Image (tube, rainbow, N blue to C red):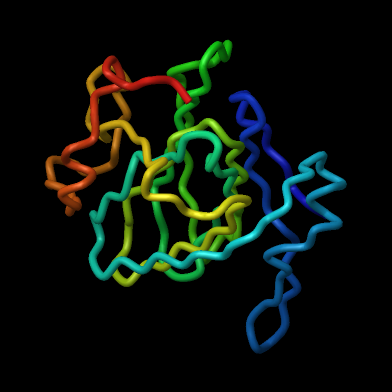
Length: 183
């Protein structure tokens, strides 16, 4: 049976697929269009991505794409674990500017569905972490958008305990939420 947790953030859903264990380990379906539709998610995915991070404390995000190339995502962790963040950036949304955090790991097998209009990012909690995600639209550099991970207006409690995250130059240059144009 699929365990579902509505994140009360405009369609973002966290769920766990059943795992079948035996003396070798476990087996689980990581994607099945039929069960997504049963959950009320009619998204058609067109591309699969894998993002590998060598070190713990690698921070990626907070990223989105603007229309007409906006993307919904189905995120899971194949190896390691991440502290995952979704921020509602939809213009006119009742939960605009609100965010939710969760830990996703290869061990627990949870998946996160993120509708279009959300910024998404994560901090790796273990070395050699691989994040696997499906998207419903193709990547377009011209439509990139994002918000700084450390914006005090959002006040996300990243579990860094004083450590400095590993960031890309692109992520360092993202705008503050107050300067962000809603999606």
